[in-house]
Length: 175
Image (cartoon, rainbow, N blue to C red; front, top):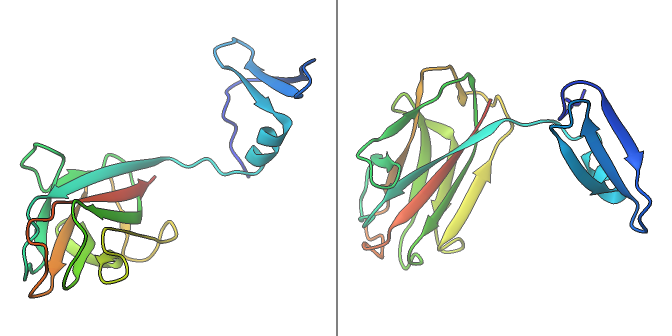
């Protein structure tokens, strides 16, 4: 069952324009938007998703990292994010400031500091600068309770280059 984007009764009226604009308004008129019929068709049956993106960063990713904690945020000296609601980790993506030249770099999601091997992403000979991975919501080992911490750990092969690459990692958290 799909959830309504609006509270209260919703009136849908076809507009008189040539591109068949449909106006959607709630009774108190706090929401007013226009969609074409094609856009409205795309919305039918789409589930409502609540998600947050948590960004972690590491400067100068070195060779031989062994499950090293990646910090949370840009200028903060924090390693994990406390989630405010129960949910599930569903995605991870990585990007680097310079393409991988030699070796591999793996990035794992963590829950309360423990590596969650069901959600990892790798920079390698094929995906040298960007990569991502996604799993279904509520995948075993990736569910999180309110108040638990999520984070990222990095592991690089011996000989990983460039040792001056900065990386960013996004964790997608659905609740």
